[in-house]
Image (cartoon, rainbow, N blue to C red; front, side, top):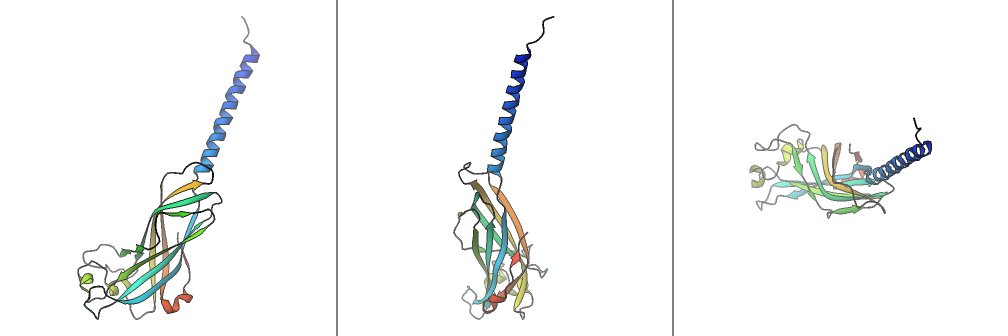
Amino acid sequence: MARRPVRNCKCYTLSVLAASLAAAAIISVVSVEMRPAHIFFYITQATTTPRNDTSGAGGATGMELSITLAANNTSRRASVLYRSIYIAICSNTGRPLHASEAGACIGTVVATPLPLRQKPRITERIHAAVALEGASSPWASLGVVPRLQDFLGDRSSSHYALSVKVTALVMFKTIGGVPGTRLHDINVTCTGVTFVSQVNQSSFLPSVCT
């Protein structure tokens, strides 16, 4: 019986091995390029500002809650494109905001223009606010806006401990790499955010979101 050519067998094995290594290298590069950056969110400022209600009725004092959210992109290579950002402030009183509402969270108006591009190793600050109306406001009685006393509870306090929920739709892109990753949905919660009056904003303690 004729023996198989050993040389051809070795060449075939080496070719398969080389192809496997090349494929593994390509997969590794793509994996690194497509890997999302690490973004850390935290609240750097949370203040309250007294305001008159928007109904025009007069005499009904409301309040505006303002927050500054910092987004820290710690990646050395990946930039971030924020397609949308939704920020909600949640009450810890345990009471519903209105009979027609099931939850105790209200959405804010994000003032920072979107989409927002963030370079590697850069911290972006996102500003948002929401207005709360007094009890005599017709908008509050209709449930269009939350009642101030239901949301904050004890109004005699100058500090209000609330929670902030952040939802962001983002895309990552590496410098000189692939065009971009798929869209990623990021959800974090910042608990124990103590809102202070504007005159006391220097006493605010940053809150980390997880």
